[in-house]
Structures are given as structure tokens and as C-alpha cells.
Amino acid sequence: MFFVGTHELVIDAKNRMSIPVDLRATVNADTEGRSFFVRPGRCRGTLELWPEKVFQRKWSEDPSSDYLSDEAFAWRQYELANTALVDPDNQGRVLIPEMLLECVGLGKEVALIGVYDHMELWNRQALAEYLAKHGSNYEQNRARSVRESQKFRQSNPAAAPIEPVSKQ
Image (tube, rainbow, N blue to C red; front, side, top):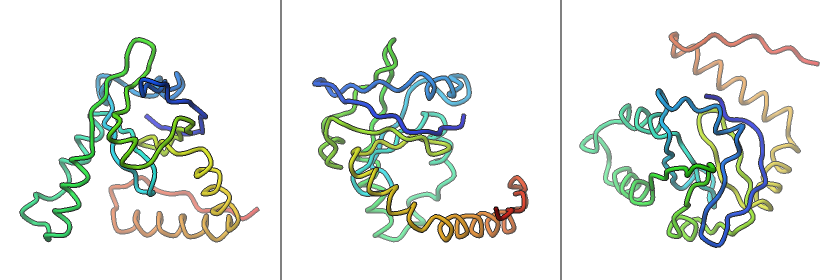
């Protein structure tokens, strides 16, 4: 499973959205599940879609609520209260709960982007602005990302090695 790309989509009057076939095809139903968990995204105004078994594994690695501060626990409550499990129909459409669309303020014209292990649903205009902002500092942002990835891999030896970056 490896989600990439940008797909401009429309959420229909019944709040259904078709997940493009190229994204659906990357999901192994046996190891990653057929359904998706939908929750508010890392960026305000977005939703994340996670293959169900990937999401469950991710959460199983998090500490028990007993180990969290009151603030972190409150966030966990908020996040999970605003999470839904959605099942694709035979045409690959998922029903996005109205509550989640309202929670993050998404309209009908959206963009679905692949972000490695999950997908994100954005307002089209907000995504265009976000990409323009981050593209304007391309070299600095890319260098920061590479440094952080290398630092992570150094502190987590079990992670896959990263190749040196060549400047072009």
C-alpha cells in the first residue's frame, strides 16, 4: 500500500465520494482491510482516510489513556468521537458522514490526495493554496524533510535505510 497523487472529486448529494480505482487497487484487503476509517486530518479543514487494519495497528501502538495527560486524553476523545468507519460499495464509493463534513467544513468539490499510508480529503482551493505555499520554499522544505527522516532513521535502526540525497 502506497498512496500518492491528487484526484479532483465531487461529493454527491448523498455525501458519497468515489475513491479512484488506482488508489483502491493499492489496498490489500487481507492485510489492510476493505473499509476505511475517516477522521479529522492533521491540517485543519481536512479529513484523513485510513485503511481499517492500518488504522487499528497505528492505534494499538499508542499508549493507554491512563498514561496521557488530561489535555492529551481530551484530544483523543475528540478525535475518536469524530472518527467513522466507512465501507466502499461495489462502485468504490464511500459515504462520508455529514457530521464529519460539517466538523471540518468541507464542501462538495474536493481533492483526495495520497499521503503514503493514508489519503487526505481537502477543499480544492485550500489544497491549491497549501501546495503553492509549500512549493514556494521547495528547497528548504525538502532539505528539512530529509534531515528529519535521517534523524528518525538514526534513532530507529530497524527503519529502512535512506539513500544519500544528491543535489541537482
